[in-house]
Image 1 (cartoon, rainbow, N blue to C red):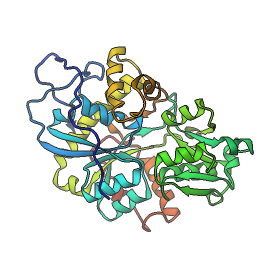
Image 2: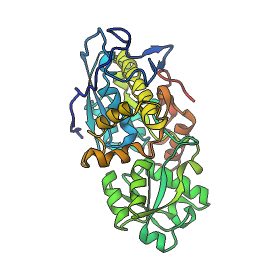
Image 3: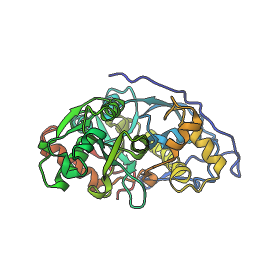
Image 4: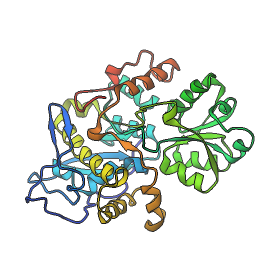
Length: 364
């Protein structure tokens, strides 16, 4: 399945000298990505003596959780690592994994899915880092009920029994969350009726119209639905999946074997994007004008159909934590793999060794 590119690679914001004409775009030491200069000080495009000559394509979804990649591109952090990066937009996690395996894109940041694990089992892809995660004190994912289902008693996780639940594909992160919700409520997930709808927009539409009873998603998507009173929140995901590694960074095994330095440089640039994401949208320690400039760049890919003045609230509200330095919660990934294996959603005997390469980032 060939990905369709959207947006260009030249997304630079206002330029700023950071005390020198050339600033390195982060370092890789001891196999662990270090984020470079502090996020607030690092705002403004970074220059590097090395030309951005190594072409790479990076898959994203049009979600705020993918803002670190967008920021790293806009701020020149990939260019500072000698990478001529191009962002490629997808509408679901599974096609992105296929794009990595086929060589249509080089890097992706998305959920652990059955498709991703199956490709890893074949030796095509590897998880190399972590990204979005549930964290204490930070708003996280919610399980929503449609208005119709809520009116008929779907007001808690226990009410999911016998109900329909939107997923993109079998073995998706949505199905994993529903499985864990059923486990928390004390009934088998086989008693939930899963509706594969392929894309996130289709899941949203089905929930709003009552074609499905429930769905889970990031706060940047769920909160507008709640504000519009087209759904009801029945649970917070962190309450039944603490520390959940929602998304991970992955690349092809071929890139690891043949372009290891490029993988390290990508992670260094990405780590700096994470620093700015955290400072601008989570901790909000950046100056207001800097935050506004970053929001404007994110808006080119996220909520882009809305005018910027309306999209701003959606982009800045309900932002989840992304692991600093792309650190990976290995225990959470292992739990997701165990679920996929137990439910025969991946090749029998799929292992963490085939799925994850822990040599690039810190593990937690």
